[in-house]
Image (cartoon, rainbow, N blue to C red):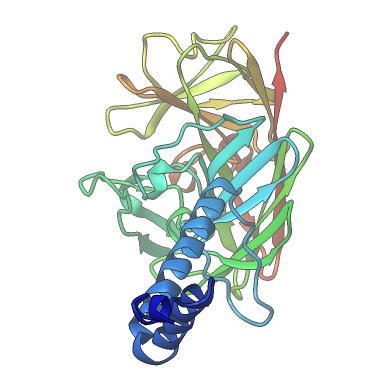
Length: 357
Protein backbone atom coordinates (compact mmCIF):
# COMPACT_ATOMS: atom_id res chain seq x y z
CA UNK A 1 0.00 0.00 0.00
CA UNK A 2 2.71 2.57 0.99
CA UNK A 3 4.67 1.67 -2.10
CA UNK A 4 1.59 2.54 -4.20
CA UNK A 5 1.05 5.90 -2.39
CA UNK A 6 4.62 7.07 -2.98
CA UNK A 7 4.98 5.63 -6.50
CA UNK A 8 3.59 8.86 -8.04
CA UNK A 9 0.99 9.21 -10.78
CA UNK A 10 -0.02 6.08 -12.59
CA UNK A 11 1.81 5.59 -15.91
CA UNK A 12 -0.24 5.24 -19.08
CA UNK A 13 -0.43 1.90 -20.66
CA UNK A 14 2.06 1.22 -23.48
CA UNK A 15 0.80 2.61 -26.80
CA UNK A 16 -1.86 4.85 -25.27
CA UNK A 17 0.26 8.03 -25.56
CA UNK A 18 1.10 7.35 -29.20
CA UNK A 19 -2.57 6.84 -29.94
CA UNK A 20 -3.47 10.16 -28.34
CA UNK A 21 -0.82 11.95 -30.41
CA UNK A 22 -2.21 10.50 -33.61
CA UNK A 23 -5.72 11.50 -32.61
CA UNK A 24 -4.54 15.06 -31.86
CA UNK A 25 -2.89 15.35 -35.29
CA UNK A 26 -6.01 14.15 -37.05
CA UNK A 27 -8.16 16.58 -35.09
CA UNK A 28 -5.87 19.51 -35.93
CA UNK A 29 -5.97 18.62 -39.61
CA UNK A 30 -9.75 18.33 -39.53
CA UNK A 31 -10.54 21.51 -37.57
CA UNK A 32 -7.65 23.79 -36.88
CA UNK A 33 -5.21 23.44 -39.79
CA UNK A 34 -6.94 23.95 -43.17
CA UNK A 35 -3.90 25.89 -44.35
CA UNK A 36 -1.84 22.73 -43.95
CA UNK A 37 -4.23 20.84 -46.20
CA UNK A 38 -4.08 23.61 -48.80
CA UNK A 39 -0.29 23.68 -48.68
CA UNK A 40 -0.15 19.92 -49.08
CA UNK A 41 -2.51 20.14 -52.07
CA UNK A 42 -0.41 22.92 -53.65
CA UNK A 43 2.74 20.89 -53.19
CA UNK A 44 1.20 17.81 -54.76
CA UNK A 45 -0.21 19.91 -57.62
CA UNK A 46 3.16 21.56 -58.22
CA UNK A 47 4.87 18.19 -58.34
CA UNK A 48 2.29 16.92 -60.81
CA UNK A 49 2.68 19.99 -63.06
CA UNK A 50 6.45 19.62 -62.94
CA UNK A 51 6.16 16.00 -64.09
CA UNK A 52 3.76 17.00 -66.87
CA UNK A 53 6.09 19.79 -68.08
CA UNK A 54 9.02 17.40 -68.08
CA UNK A 55 7.08 14.75 -70.01
CA UNK A 56 5.85 17.35 -72.51
CA UNK A 57 9.38 18.63 -73.11
CA UNK A 58 10.65 15.13 -73.77
CA UNK A 59 7.73 14.04 -75.94
CA UNK A 60 7.67 14.68 -79.72
CA UNK A 61 5.68 17.70 -80.86
CA UNK A 62 2.03 16.79 -81.48
CA UNK A 63 0.48 16.89 -84.92
CA UNK A 64 -2.00 19.74 -85.20
CA UNK A 65 -5.54 18.53 -85.90
CA UNK A 66 -8.17 20.70 -87.52
CA UNK A 67 -11.39 21.17 -85.59
CA UNK A 68 -14.34 20.31 -87.88
CA UNK A 69 -16.21 23.39 -89.03
CA UNK A 70 -13.65 25.78 -87.60
CA UNK A 71 -10.62 27.42 -89.15
CA UNK A 72 -7.38 26.01 -87.80
CA UNK A 73 -5.29 28.81 -86.28
CA UNK A 74 -2.36 26.60 -85.30
CA UNK A 75 0.88 28.47 -86.12
CA UNK A 76 2.59 25.24 -87.20
CA UNK A 77 1.71 21.78 -88.44
CA UNK A 78 3.94 18.75 -88.05
CA UNK A 79 3.76 15.87 -90.51
CA UNK A 80 5.91 12.86 -89.76
CA UNK A 81 6.65 9.22 -90.41
CA UNK A 82 9.48 6.93 -89.37
CA UNK A 83 12.16 8.92 -91.23
CA UNK A 84 10.70 12.31 -92.15
CA UNK A 85 9.45 15.25 -90.08
CA UNK A 86 8.01 18.21 -92.00
CA UNK A 87 7.06 21.39 -90.10
CA UNK A 88 4.66 23.72 -91.96
CA UNK A 89 3.62 27.31 -91.22
CA UNK A 90 0.05 27.95 -92.46
CA UNK A 91 0.11 31.52 -91.13
CA UNK A 92 3.25 32.32 -93.12
CA UNK A 93 2.58 31.40 -96.71
CA UNK A 94 2.02 27.75 -95.89
CA UNK A 95 5.78 27.35 -96.22
CA UNK A 96 8.15 24.74 -94.81
CA UNK A 97 9.82 25.73 -91.56
CA UNK A 98 11.80 22.50 -91.24
CA UNK A 99 12.43 19.36 -93.29
CA UNK A 100 14.21 16.72 -91.23
CA UNK A 101 15.26 13.35 -92.59
CA UNK A 102 16.62 10.76 -90.15
CA UNK A 103 17.15 13.62 -87.69
CA UNK A 104 19.11 15.77 -90.16
CA UNK A 105 17.87 19.21 -91.20
CA UNK A 106 17.80 19.31 -95.01
CA UNK A 107 16.84 22.95 -95.60
CA UNK A 108 18.73 25.98 -94.38
CA UNK A 109 16.64 27.77 -91.76
CA UNK A 110 17.08 30.62 -89.29
CA UNK A 111 15.56 29.51 -85.96
CA UNK A 112 15.81 32.96 -84.37
CA UNK A 113 13.93 34.70 -87.19
CA UNK A 114 10.17 34.44 -87.46
CA UNK A 115 9.79 36.04 -90.91
CA UNK A 116 9.29 34.38 -94.30
CA UNK A 117 13.00 34.60 -95.13
CA UNK A 118 13.67 32.26 -92.19
CA UNK A 119 11.69 29.44 -93.81
CA UNK A 120 13.33 26.51 -95.52
CA UNK A 121 11.02 26.70 -98.54
CA UNK A 122 8.01 28.78 -99.59
CA UNK A 123 5.64 28.90 -102.58
CA UNK A 124 5.91 31.35 -105.47
CA UNK A 125 2.44 32.33 -106.68
CA UNK A 126 0.82 33.83 -108.74
CA UNK A 127 4.24 34.69 -110.18
CA UNK A 128 7.87 34.07 -109.33
CA UNK A 129 10.90 36.32 -109.27
CA UNK A 130 10.79 40.07 -109.80
CA UNK A 131 8.38 42.32 -111.69
CA UNK A 132 10.32 45.47 -112.58
CA UNK A 133 9.16 48.33 -110.37
CA UNK A 134 5.99 46.32 -109.80
CA UNK A 135 4.56 47.67 -113.06
CA UNK A 136 3.13 46.02 -116.15
CA UNK A 137 0.26 46.33 -118.60
CA UNK A 138 -2.42 43.68 -119.09
CA UNK A 139 -5.40 43.88 -121.43
CA UNK A 140 -4.66 47.57 -121.99
CA UNK A 141 -4.71 48.31 -118.26
CA UNK A 142 -1.70 49.73 -116.41
CA UNK A 143 -1.10 47.85 -113.17
CA UNK A 144 1.16 48.91 -110.30
CA UNK A 145 1.93 46.49 -107.46
CA UNK A 146 3.29 47.37 -104.06
CA UNK A 147 6.91 46.64 -103.25
CA UNK A 148 6.93 43.70 -100.86
CA UNK A 149 10.46 42.77 -99.80
CA UNK A 150 10.03 41.93 -96.07
CA UNK A 151 13.49 43.08 -94.96
CA UNK A 152 14.47 45.68 -97.57
CA UNK A 153 11.90 48.48 -97.96
CA UNK A 154 14.11 50.13 -100.59
CA UNK A 155 14.05 47.09 -102.90
CA UNK A 156 12.60 48.58 -106.09
CA UNK A 157 10.71 45.57 -107.42
CA UNK A 158 7.75 43.38 -106.49
CA UNK A 159 8.90 39.81 -106.04
CA UNK A 160 7.70 36.23 -105.64
CA UNK A 161 3.97 36.95 -105.82
CA UNK A 162 1.72 37.37 -102.80
CA UNK A 163 1.10 33.96 -101.30
CA UNK A 164 4.48 33.59 -99.58
CA UNK A 165 3.55 36.55 -97.34
CA UNK A 166 -0.10 35.62 -96.72
CA UNK A 167 -1.81 33.21 -94.31
CA UNK A 168 -3.26 29.95 -95.57
CA UNK A 169 -6.23 28.11 -94.11
CA UNK A 170 -5.68 24.51 -93.07
CA UNK A 171 -8.37 22.60 -94.94
CA UNK A 172 -7.20 19.12 -93.95
CA UNK A 173 -4.38 17.64 -91.91
CA UNK A 174 -3.46 14.05 -91.18
CA UNK A 175 -0.32 12.45 -89.85
CA UNK A 176 1.47 12.50 -93.22
CA UNK A 177 -0.64 14.87 -95.34
CA UNK A 178 -1.87 18.47 -95.20
CA UNK A 179 -4.03 20.61 -97.50
CA UNK A 180 -3.69 24.40 -97.28
CA UNK A 181 -5.67 27.01 -99.18
CA UNK A 182 -6.14 30.76 -99.54
CA UNK A 183 -8.22 33.04 -101.73
CA UNK A 184 -6.83 36.29 -103.08
CA UNK A 185 -9.41 39.03 -103.49
CA UNK A 186 -9.29 42.06 -105.75
CA UNK A 187 -6.57 44.61 -105.04
CA UNK A 188 -3.62 46.00 -106.92
CA UNK A 189 -3.55 42.58 -108.58
CA UNK A 190 -6.97 42.87 -110.24
CA UNK A 191 -7.75 39.15 -110.50
CA UNK A 192 -9.30 36.88 -107.92
CA UNK A 193 -7.71 33.48 -107.54
CA UNK A 194 -7.38 30.54 -105.19
CA UNK A 195 -4.01 29.04 -104.28
CA UNK A 196 -3.79 25.50 -102.91
CA UNK A 197 -0.88 23.54 -101.47
CA UNK A 198 -0.88 19.83 -100.68
CA UNK A 199 2.01 18.30 -98.76
CA UNK A 200 2.30 14.50 -98.64
CA UNK A 201 5.16 12.62 -97.01
CA UNK A 202 6.99 9.81 -98.79
CA UNK A 203 9.35 7.27 -97.24
CA UNK A 204 12.35 9.62 -97.51
CA UNK A 205 10.91 13.02 -98.34
CA UNK A 206 7.71 14.68 -99.48
CA UNK A 207 5.65 15.75 -102.48
CA UNK A 208 4.55 19.36 -102.79
CA UNK A 209 1.54 20.05 -104.99
CA UNK A 210 1.01 23.73 -105.80
CA UNK A 211 -2.10 24.79 -107.73
CA UNK A 212 -3.81 28.01 -108.72
CA UNK A 213 -7.37 28.60 -109.96
CA UNK A 214 -8.54 31.75 -111.73
CA UNK A 215 -11.72 32.88 -109.96
CA UNK A 216 -12.10 36.01 -112.10
CA UNK A 217 -14.39 36.45 -115.08
CA UNK A 218 -11.48 37.29 -117.40
CA UNK A 219 -8.10 35.70 -118.22
CA UNK A 220 -5.40 36.01 -115.57
CA UNK A 221 -1.60 35.89 -116.01
CA UNK A 222 0.06 33.28 -113.83
CA UNK A 223 3.32 31.66 -112.85
CA UNK A 224 4.32 29.18 -110.14
CA UNK A 225 7.46 27.96 -108.44
CA UNK A 226 9.19 26.89 -105.24
CA UNK A 227 11.90 28.69 -103.28
CA UNK A 228 14.00 26.30 -101.15
CA UNK A 229 17.14 27.24 -99.20
CA UNK A 230 20.02 24.80 -98.65
CA UNK A 231 23.15 24.80 -96.44
CA UNK A 232 26.13 25.78 -98.56
CA UNK A 233 28.98 24.20 -96.58
CA UNK A 234 30.50 21.24 -98.48
CA UNK A 235 27.55 21.17 -100.90
CA UNK A 236 27.64 20.35 -104.60
CA UNK A 237 24.85 21.25 -107.02
CA UNK A 238 24.01 19.53 -110.29
CA UNK A 239 21.28 20.32 -112.82
CA UNK A 240 20.95 20.22 -116.58
CA UNK A 241 20.24 23.52 -118.38
CA UNK A 242 20.87 25.04 -121.82
CA UNK A 243 21.18 28.78 -121.25
CA UNK A 244 20.97 31.69 -118.85
CA UNK A 245 19.18 35.00 -118.51
CA UNK A 246 21.80 37.22 -116.91
CA UNK A 247 20.64 39.99 -114.62
CA UNK A 248 21.68 43.54 -115.30
CA UNK A 249 22.49 46.25 -112.77
CA UNK A 250 18.78 46.60 -111.91
CA UNK A 251 18.48 42.86 -111.04
CA UNK A 252 16.19 42.36 -114.05
CA UNK A 253 17.26 39.97 -116.86
CA UNK A 254 19.12 41.88 -119.54
CA UNK A 255 20.33 39.23 -122.03
CA UNK A 256 20.17 35.52 -122.75
CA UNK A 257 23.12 33.41 -123.80
CA UNK A 258 23.55 29.73 -124.49
CA UNK A 259 25.65 27.61 -122.16
CA UNK A 260 27.89 24.70 -123.01
CA UNK A 261 28.45 22.77 -119.82
CA UNK A 262 27.44 23.76 -116.32
CA UNK A 263 28.72 26.83 -114.48
CA UNK A 264 30.66 26.59 -111.25
CA UNK A 265 27.43 26.68 -109.30
CA UNK A 266 28.80 27.19 -105.80
CA UNK A 267 32.13 28.81 -106.63
CA UNK A 268 33.45 32.20 -105.62
CA UNK A 269 31.48 34.13 -108.24
CA UNK A 270 28.04 35.07 -106.84
CA UNK A 271 25.07 34.03 -108.94
CA UNK A 272 21.60 35.54 -109.16
CA UNK A 273 20.43 34.39 -112.58
CA UNK A 274 17.62 32.46 -114.22
CA UNK A 275 18.71 29.38 -116.14
CA UNK A 276 16.63 28.00 -118.99
CA UNK A 277 15.94 24.57 -120.43
CA UNK A 278 15.94 22.80 -117.10
CA UNK A 279 15.64 19.06 -117.68
CA UNK A 280 15.73 16.14 -115.29
CA UNK A 281 16.25 16.31 -111.53
CA UNK A 282 18.08 18.88 -109.44
CA UNK A 283 20.61 17.14 -107.18
CA UNK A 284 22.35 18.54 -104.10
CA UNK A 285 25.16 16.48 -102.59
CA UNK A 286 26.81 16.72 -99.19
CA UNK A 287 29.47 14.28 -97.94
CA UNK A 288 26.95 11.99 -96.24
CA UNK A 289 23.60 12.92 -97.80
CA UNK A 290 21.98 13.60 -101.16
CA UNK A 291 18.75 15.45 -101.92
CA UNK A 292 17.02 15.00 -105.27
CA UNK A 293 14.39 17.48 -106.40
CA UNK A 294 12.04 16.31 -109.15
CA UNK A 295 10.39 19.54 -110.31
CA UNK A 296 7.06 19.57 -112.09
CA UNK A 297 7.52 19.36 -115.89
CA UNK A 298 6.16 22.92 -116.17
CA UNK A 299 9.12 24.21 -114.14
CA UNK A 300 11.56 24.50 -117.05
CA UNK A 301 13.43 27.42 -115.48
CA UNK A 302 15.69 27.40 -112.43
CA UNK A 303 16.86 30.48 -110.53
CA UNK A 304 20.18 29.95 -108.75
CA UNK A 305 21.06 32.42 -105.99
CA UNK A 306 24.44 32.25 -104.21
CA UNK A 307 24.78 35.47 -102.18
CA UNK A 308 28.33 36.41 -101.16
CA UNK A 309 29.24 35.93 -97.52
CA UNK A 310 26.19 33.78 -96.74
CA UNK A 311 26.09 30.15 -95.60
CA UNK A 312 23.18 29.17 -97.84
CA UNK A 313 22.22 29.01 -101.50
CA UNK A 314 18.92 28.75 -103.36
CA UNK A 315 17.95 26.76 -106.41
CA UNK A 316 14.37 27.60 -107.36
CA UNK A 317 12.43 25.52 -109.90
CA UNK A 318 9.97 27.93 -111.56
CA UNK A 319 7.66 28.08 -114.56
CA UNK A 320 8.86 31.38 -116.03
CA UNK A 321 11.72 33.86 -116.11
CA UNK A 322 11.74 36.98 -113.88
CA UNK A 323 9.73 39.94 -115.22
CA UNK A 324 8.18 37.68 -117.86
CA UNK A 325 5.02 39.77 -117.88
CA UNK A 326 6.99 42.69 -119.36
CA UNK A 327 8.96 40.73 -121.97
CA UNK A 328 8.28 40.89 -125.70
CA UNK A 329 9.49 37.36 -126.34
CA UNK A 330 6.96 34.61 -126.93
CA UNK A 331 5.38 32.74 -123.99
CA UNK A 332 7.38 29.70 -125.08
CA UNK A 333 10.56 31.70 -124.41
CA UNK A 334 9.48 33.41 -121.19
CA UNK A 335 7.28 30.69 -119.67
CA UNK A 336 4.49 33.18 -118.95
CA UNK A 337 0.95 31.84 -119.31
CA UNK A 338 -2.65 32.97 -119.04
CA UNK A 339 -5.44 31.10 -117.26
CA UNK A 340 -8.99 31.25 -118.59
CA UNK A 341 -11.81 32.09 -116.16
CA UNK A 342 -12.31 29.10 -113.87
CA UNK A 343 -9.16 27.34 -115.13
CA UNK A 344 -7.08 25.43 -112.59
CA UNK A 345 -3.37 24.82 -113.06
CA UNK A 346 -1.77 22.20 -110.81
CA UNK A 347 1.87 21.23 -110.38
CA UNK A 348 3.61 18.57 -108.29
CA UNK A 349 7.27 18.48 -107.27
CA UNK A 350 9.09 16.16 -104.89
CA UNK A 351 12.05 16.32 -102.50
CA UNK A 352 13.79 13.05 -101.64
CA UNK A 353 16.78 12.46 -99.34
CA UNK A 354 19.17 9.52 -99.38
CA UNK A 355 22.31 8.45 -97.55
CA UNK A 356 25.57 8.32 -99.47
CA UNK A 357 27.88 5.30 -99.14
